Image (tube, rainbow, N blue to C red; front, side, top):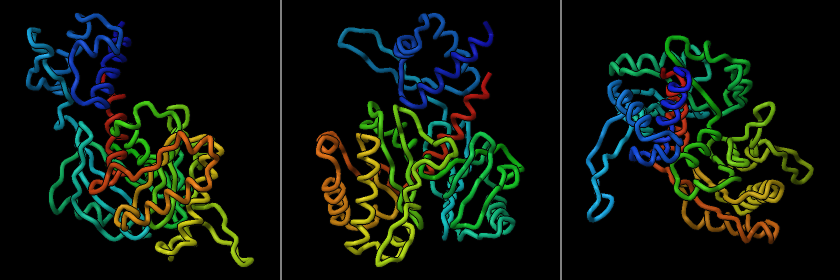
Length: 335
């Protein structure tokens, strides 16, 4: 009985996290619990300062007012470390998934120097937090908590413990975190079953949603589109290596579009979201990329395919996803 109560608390917290503002009636409907059961659970969560009751709203002209429930942002503080090849963005997230960027630092490939730079920054400003959450540009085995490889950083077989041993910490691949952020917080993703997020940074990665769930692959390598091999003039190179130095060139755009279209055709994707460096480029580049993808997509797929830029700009989707990763991990510890 007590175990069921704990599971229901976690279910309620996760639902509020994803929907933000909810009513007790709504929680009763989605959980299948009675109104009295929901009330008892909610009151317990309010007492623990995990949920707060906001302003009341009127649901109808003559109806009773219903309180709005939301997560208490101050219940969890997440220090976010969004790593890329050249720079690492540091930020702070809260229990409701909101993220604030604090600083951008140079990424050191020496892991001890890298950790020291971050810890000195934390100490300098006396930041307080409950979790540390990493966004990693590489293959992450989340079952064993190991960075299998981050080739552009020269890191491999690195445990989460060796990366950050002092605090509660979580990590995941940056592209996976991006697609999860879109799935959690973008309205047009709520009913989408199959989608891909293309992340263009110093490398190119992809996060996949298949049948409504994040798809990592058996060896956690799913979506690594940047490592597809391109052959030009008898010269072989990965897509991201060809693309990296020629972001504004037509052939680079066509190479990326062709590789995306292959994945759309194979997996029958409904949506492709593109983020990263492309958000700082002209809209003309995105329009040309979108047209080039559609030109190579099977006509039956094209009719149902939506291609758009990420909904996250200033706060990168990878940081929002990293915050969400810590929030959901924390919820799973609540008793």
